[in-house]
Length: 118
Image (tube, rainbow, N blue to C red; front, side):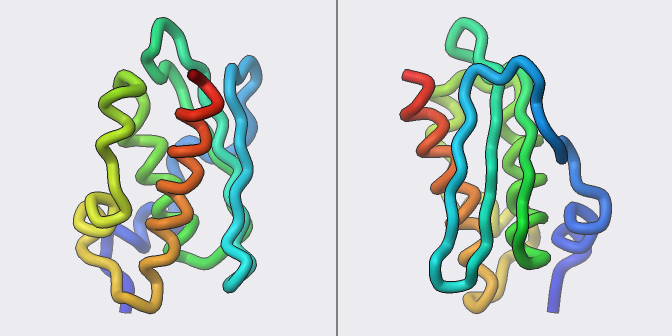
């Protein structure tokens, strides 16, 4: 059911944990499935220098959060804004509709983080 990319990010999450010195931290949830994602970043000169996450959720939510932190680190806030749930899904080999909510949760967190940092 899961692609190799999803399983890799789930089993070996990148950037998991707290981020000391974060300049922005948000927490979002999906009330339907109960997944919760906390996303933190250190933003310097409108660039995301570092990002970390904590997630209580399904395999896909954890994989999407991991991939999101990889994709936003080093990018400008404007570049990060271009990410979509669809782009995360494609990067993970295409998520089935039943698990697509993990990509949406990650992007919801990113949008909240960007809004908080402006």
